[in-house]
Length: 293
Image (cartoon, rainbow, N blue to C red; front, side, top):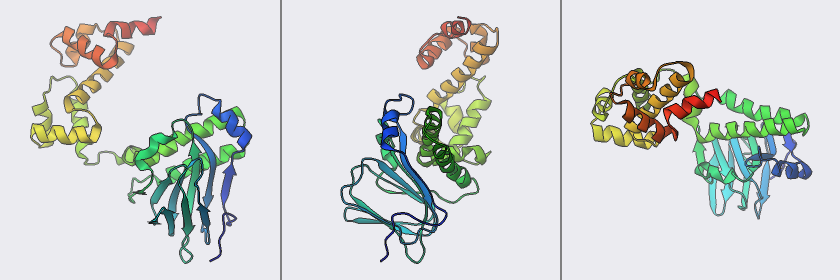
């Protein structure tokens, strides 16, 4: 089998010099997560890498077309189109393209003090299901954005911009549904429907039973599903949306705290203030005063 590490027609590749990496490590804005190497290998026939001791960085491989294989330990992972895989740092591995149907991959080596936070998508196959709202083009454009800016040299501005883009790129893989949300519109998702109902009724003192009834579930089942999907209990989420609206009024109107409380369905302004302070960690009065300092 012919083996090539790089050198594919149409490829793009940037390897950030070690001296520049040392500068990045001293920059508090970007030392949490940064690119060390990034590239695009189209139709990468005979692409092959074998690292018996792994490398210091994590490696993300995103396959657009064709096939390839990633081996970690004794386990082989077939990488088909619309799959991505993150190889953990310091992990021995081998990967290679299929000879008959070679993969087309975007890839990035990344490191930093916070790079381990992406463990949720590390060490296993991740599927990006094709969809009319997949935003595949936007994701690949993020790779290109980083590549182009780094290709213009390593000024402080270029490094900061490119590595801040890396956060957005990684988020597009870790939070696929959220990345697609901008194109979803009024898609019939249970959680989105519930949140829209909350937003449409911020002026009402709705209870858990009201939210569950609109969603067509029992209160207990609704609460369980909503909490699993959002990480917050339904009524807590509803109150967070109300406090978001309260902040808007405090910032842009002369309404009193009692009037804002009433507009948001709170019959007791003192209970509203306690709720606001619990969520915002400051009182409504203190929040409003901060804009006039």
